[in-house]
Length: 329
View 1 (cartoon, helix red, strand yellow):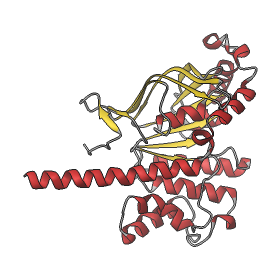
View 2 (cartoon, one colour; view 1 turned 90 degrees about the vertical axis):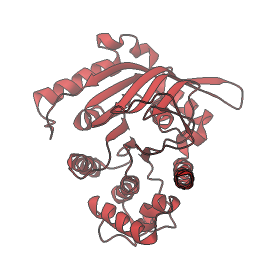
View 3 (cartoon, rainbow, N blue to C red; view 1 turned 180 degrees about the vertical axis):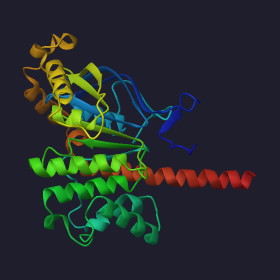
View 4 (spheres, rainbow, N blue to C red; view 1 turned 60 degrees about the horizontal axis):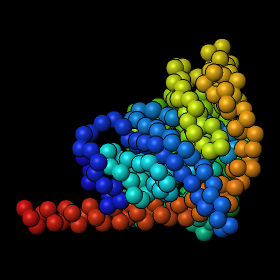
C-alpha cells in the first residue's frame, strides 16, 4: 500500500474496499455579521471501490459542501472523514475534482491545463506529455492540444476539466454538477463519455462521486443515489440503483426509479415526510451558504491549487521517507 500524506493520521490498519468514510459529519460557517449557518448535520457515508454514487438534493441541501468535505478542502465542524483508513486533516490525496464552472487557466493551452497537476507533482516533461496526450485523446479532444479555453465551447472546456482530473489517476473522481452549465445535447454526450470511460477495463479510477440536482442524471449514471434534505443538509435516503447498463431512460424500471427518487426528494415518500416544509427556503439557504463560505464553495481555481500543492508535498514526503529507509537499510 502506498505511503499516504502527512495530512492523514492513521486510525485503523486493516485494508478494505472502502475508499472514503465519513462519520457523523456536521458543517457550519459563521458570516461576517456573526450569524452561524448550519450547512450539514450528522451525515455518515461510505464511498467504496467499483461504484458510482450520486449525491442528489435541492438547492441549499449542502451537496457541494459535502463533496468538498469529502475532498478535504474544508474541515468538518464535527465528525471525521477518512481516506483508506486514515483521518483527513487536509486535501484528500486520492481525489481529483471536475468542477461545474470548468476552472481552467485561461492563459494555458489545453495540453498545459491537463498537465497542470502532473507538473505540480514533479513529473518529467516527457512523461507529462505522454500522459496528457493519452487523456486528451481518451476524452475526445485530439487535435485541440494547442487551443486556449476561450477558443473552446462549453462542452470542450469541460472535457479538458475531465482530462485534467483523469490524468492524475485518482482513486476517486469527484464531479460537482459537471453538466449543469451545458446544453442538453452536450451534457448527454458527456455523460455517455464518462460512462464509457468508467466501463473501460483500462480505467484507473476506482469510484466516482457526482453531485447533481437532476434526478434522471442520477439514475442514468449511479449505482447508488444518496439523497440529502435541506435546512441543514442531512441524509434522508441511500438508494441502490439495480438497473443494467446501458440504461434505457424510456423503460418502465428507469421511470419507476425516477418517480421513487422524486417522491423522496419532494417529501411525498414515507422516507422523507418532513422534507416538503424543510425545503421551502432552499434557494435562499443556498445563497446564504455561498455568502458565508465563498472560498470553499465558489473558488474552484483556488481549490485546485490547494490540491495540487498538497500532492506535490505528498510526493516530496514520500521521496524523503524512501531516502530515509534506504539510508537506514
